[in-house]
Length: 435
Image 1 (cartoon, rainbow, N blue to C red):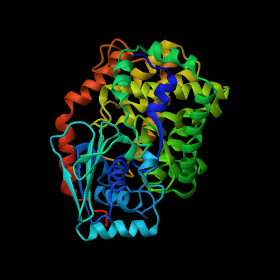
Image 2: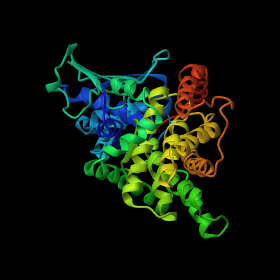
Image 3: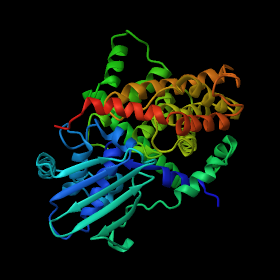
Image 4: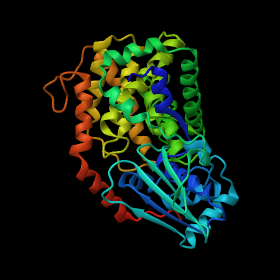
């Protein structure tokens, strides 16, 4: 079975409000609550280690700076709309936030860590005193695979119509793994006006976050700090710094809990910021048409999807660095007029540079990593266009960009399992609290 570029964009790119790990927990809780006859009185949650890690400390939008997966689940119960998918928390208001906080404060939310669970997994059980409803999210953040009431599995018609089963995703990932970089570039020929408008909506969505970050400096304020350094003439604004400023400013806003959606890529809002914004940032430095920019962004999403098909949705490796970063470097090289060899060299350059960046959960500090990934993506492309390419004999770099990206997948899924456990162990010892 083959897919077209429209299929890949439809399945891999979507708006998401807030960090997708607590959002996925809220989605599971909201999907279960939607079929519960009475008022919810208790919530039990079970999550895999990577959902736990990524949702431990990140601020949930619309809560005034609160965090925690237990709270995320309670917010899904009292203020979530499962029909909105990854924007499940859009309807939040002060009343629903207070009800969620009360449920957590009264000890009526339990969060269970499934230490040995591999792959993305969330189970939510909501009780009303007489009935229990359950929803399960698996493999993808918005993939509600089942909803049941009192142990009876409900048909799809009785669950939220917009919650994606995403049964096509395993086939898509198997198919995309078999492609060469040349095939990904060739897919750009199939982009139509609808695809371009969708890609442009991704730009508008993510630039709104960046503009908020630059104006107000939420989170760590990395983007605003870099912009201030330019204004003070302490650093010079070039392609690389422009990419860093725009991308980190958007991450500042997103990780700071600003209630604005991000256009995600491969299930991650920060991946979407990294895949899109460096390319948008450099356009002012070159002569190009909007069509070229959007094609470059499409390639960025395709390469991101290719890497994530090998690494998995969540891992010990920072996907913004090696997946979305690889996508952005490919897109930048394409936009700068590079040929297939230049695009391949850009991908290999950034993976050689950033392969060791770990993922230690979602939090305000992600803005630092996105600043690094965005700037390095541009640098990797510029190096390749100047004939600077790492050698195939170097470390995990393969003879081809495809082999290099596959090696990252092997490193992530096989080589860093214990690293992932150790990261979580360190984070658990810090005992983050949402209150």
